[in-house]
Image (cartoon, rainbow, N blue to C red; front, top):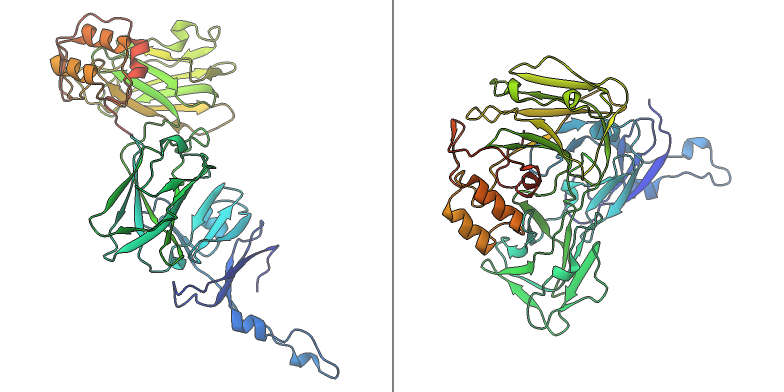
Length: 444
């Protein structure tokens, strides 16, 4: 036998999404006992005899049959199962889930967790209907609607919601003539409709909505919000949950970034989030010995925080420092240079990790390699980059500081990971590094 602590009531699946769940009432133990999820047939629940009439014996009482559900998790929606278990606590890797249920526009089930702060879609409760797809580009913010269902889909309204506030309502475009944006659009919810008619989507129809996606950061160490929900209403008045697909690379950084200048080898660390962090240690490693130990300018040498940093002896595969007493504040306004620690021409395999105050495990930061002045990302600072600067061909915007970087590094060529030639004398480029962090990105 088993027992629970408290029940989170759900609802009955009645949208023909899964024959094994049809007409099943779903509920769960949402506190700190086991997090098990159960199903019971609606007819069985309604038919249970739970109260004795005059003259009836206790043997007349009956109860509904209750079964436990097996759970799987696909955290990024790629179809690959991350975990498979028999309870929600183990699935979400929490001691209590504080789960709640929600019903989507097509009767699909959502489960939220107050512990993780996330909302999860139960995939096999989504009915098989013709769906439009909203494609969101992480980098440019462009949103487009297309139809790959194989059938014509006619709509007369649509809505976008984002709990994180990742909608840019002022950038939202209408689907065309007759369509009107709602006057109450916000960063959390935006809609538009056509009171005069409908728009038919066939397989060739692509409708732009403008660059109306602007990802917001939830917290330090958590990816920018990819939580846009797309709902459209068909011509017959039925709401349908559309597909949402994300493409491109997000420019939003959620951690401490170590930017490496490929022309000089200088590395600068900066917390590129608005969430200030207290750091008490860091390490830079290279499996292929790409560290230039002679160029290391340690925090101890710099006397940061009154000399409280202690540097371990430098090695070609590792640089490590810890705070002897206290912490150092990392915020979005304070870059810290580590000196020219990257050996020019070697493999770009540096790994940066840091220790936050009160934690026992290192966190992995993001390493970004840049070549200042290389506006077209071909690892060659030449006249084509000046043309790119003139046209503004970048997530930009470009400034006179960028032009100065182009002038300083003109003629620099990086031949893959093998060599760096024609490098001018090193200069003060710390300000430039942050502006060109998107030139060449490698995620570790």
